[in-house]
Image 1: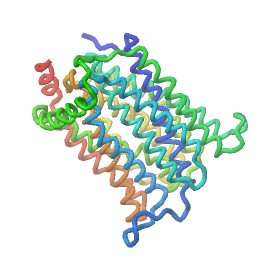
Image 2 (image 1 turned 120 degrees about the vertical axis):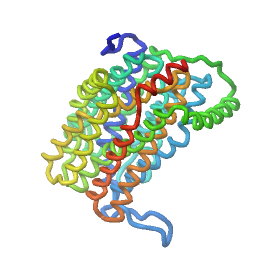
Image 3 (image 1 turned 135 degrees about the vertical axis):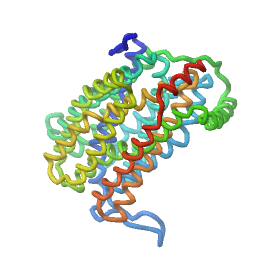
Image 4 (image 1 turned 90 degrees about the vertical axis):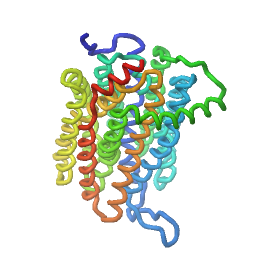
Length: 437
């Protein structure tokens, strides 16, 4: 049967549009505007961390890396239990709504951050990122309810493409606000930056409405009390850990994803602050490059999804990882804004594709009636990446005083992840799940 290239129902469109909603956080807050603004909040001499003899001086780049790692650690702890609870009768959409609007409020709250408030900025970002990442556990879990094996790669790719369009449109508005604040009735670039965080919270909240109104989920278990649900969730998590041994290829995929996603997530969250601090690029160049990535990334995600449907998810993913490896090596040598723009164009073509294919490949080997639980572990793998990648970057930068060396260390993650991925037998993993349905 031929795969559908576009969503064919309101259920699927509602799911796709949530990527339009929360991608505004990924672009404006996680990748573009906040990292640059955060660097301006931290004193040029850095910040002292630790206690007494165990204290050390850290830079803006490293403090940002530690902040990202902290938020990821919080999600990693709770995601498996919450995923198991949602599969235990509570459903995915209620949890998605909780995390979604928690993230919206925290993001809008960043308007309160001014010069020197780097700890307040860190705290609000941590809560916002917990909302963003925690919600994705349940958002990704719903994908298995909406698409067949023939449709899943394409639908996942369209979701990422919608995210690039949505995130890119709002980022364009935010860039115009920051570059020309007077046109928007704002007194300064700082205020334009702070107001941009409010626009993200509102955008995220409004575009999330279709998934809650249109999209149905598959719930086959009667809801239980909170106490019983938590107990059941813990038992399910323990059982899932044991049963992962029975899903060999799914388990190997998780390990591979943990490794190469380390590199991807670190590039995403550190690119802007690296360009600002190490390359001395202007805010216009940094945000402009990221906006270009949003524009090119949309068709890139769709094309990668179609390539996966035609030639297979695993071969396509391996190609994108090879390109990621080359991009990091080239980034180590960059010195100019033109090089930053050129590398951004290459990354745009593979960023959404590598993430979309990873999501759909994992989903195709997951039991349908336990999708949120298994996607909880997928999220943990992703969040562990978001912990150790930025943490590794920050530590190497602090120890060596050289952010280029920290960047080059990411090549190990892409190499190791690609090698582990070659051990995944996708056909065997899908047959195992089909036999159990």
